[in-house]
Image (cartoon, rainbow over all chains, first blue to last red; front, side, top):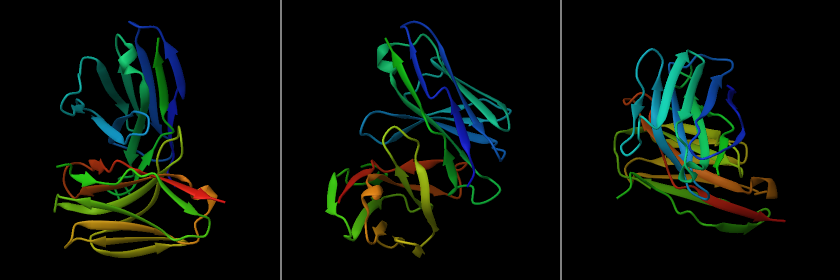
Length: 118
Length: 112
């Protein structure tokens, strides 16, 4: 199956600093990627849709100035958590649909990034 | 009402049991119905998907979709301890740019 990588897998940062998380589709191109947030024992909450060549689309309640998304190429999207606070601590996961085969159904997830803000 | 409802469990079964996991949904525009498995502190892994109504079988796993009832199921036969994970149902439509809505996930424990 298709592979999506995320980096870093785990990061600790101090309150007030910014953290960048990368999401890469390794063996396919993705004009769209999704960013999710997951709290312990809860489901995935869609934060935003990352679109190559255009602005990201944010879900209601997600601060676009706090969670900056850049879809730099057909295989790379980045999420930057700006001025991080302890309440931003969470598990962040990206996904990319394999648009060449299935699209809406075949989404491939990265392994996730665990962010801890102290 | 949430678009997708899924009992979070936990569900505990003995090894070898048949497991039935279910979701209901409210949006009749959904066309793709997926099941993902997620181990602790890992990203979700796509198990299988079904387009529109019907059944699909893959090894010990069978997915069923009943669009008339807006109800989907995942059956696991001969369950193994390695099947212990959280199972998330997910749905998407033909529009919306592949946007997917997830259920809450059901935590499954298979005891040896």
